[in-house]
Image (tube, rainbow, N blue to C red; front, side, top):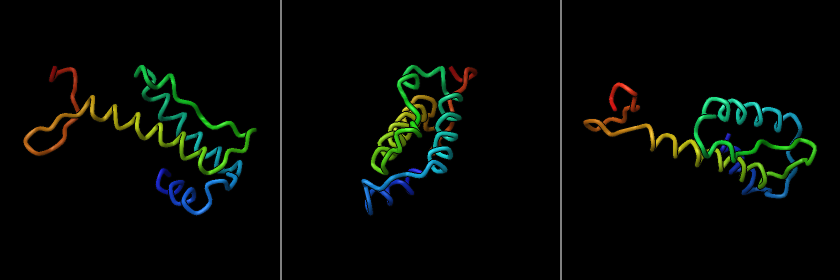
Length: 93
């Protein structure tokens, strides 16, 4: 989804986003936000407002914030172990 909106933003940053796309994007964003709701930074993330009819660049900004937040979670909970990445668990602490 992130790459799709990157391409759309390059072609037409001020192009409007359809309600169907907003619904699809919000579904994914809400699921990510709910799954990681215990992370402090996640309370600051927003979903798209379908009533405002955002432009491609607006969607890219919101999705980019989620991508950055997910990267932060990955950094926080993964560790390099013998050349492979592993998730940190309570048993490993």
